[in-house]
Amino acid sequence: MLTMPTNIDKAEIEAFVNHVTAEVMDGNVDPLSVHIRCKAVVKALESIIERTEELAKDTAATYGKGEFKFHGASVQLREPRDMPDFNHDPVCVELADRLKARHELVKTAFKMADTAAIVDPNTGEVVPVVPVKPAKTTLTVTFR
Image 1 (cartoon, helix red, strand yellow):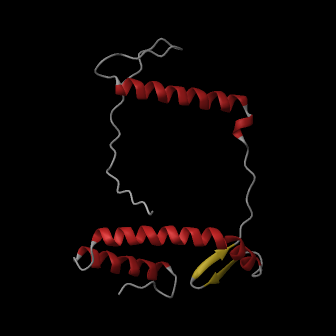
Image 2 (tube, one colour; image 1 turned 180 degrees about the vertical axis):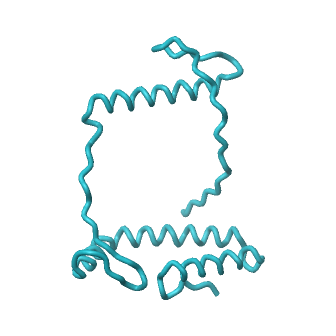
Image 3 (tube, rainbow, N blue to C red; image 1 turned 90 degrees about the vertical axis):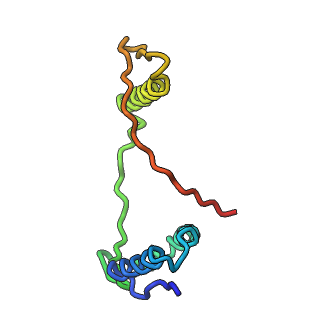
């Protein structure tokens, strides 16, 4: 039987992961079954975290400022830092637009490498055909 450790520190998490992985690798548990169940648990946990985060923040605030230990974890409530909104800077907006347009030209040149050369309308240069960036096969799990 697979259970979650009661002590939540890195070593216990790693031991749990190693145990489950070994069970799969040794053929004691079906890998697809473990994968699907893990995906389901992740989905459930993400939802629980989302629904309880504000209450958890309120509880953490009662421990005062700074870092504290709780159930084997280091916990710290951090205030967000304000960041600049780059969308209000015309130069940043222009550069982002140009980069997006360039990406589209490079994609088109890649797709049409065997049939035509693509010319950048702004510079007149032939857009190079870049090498393939290898992709890996993914396993999609959808719960209905």
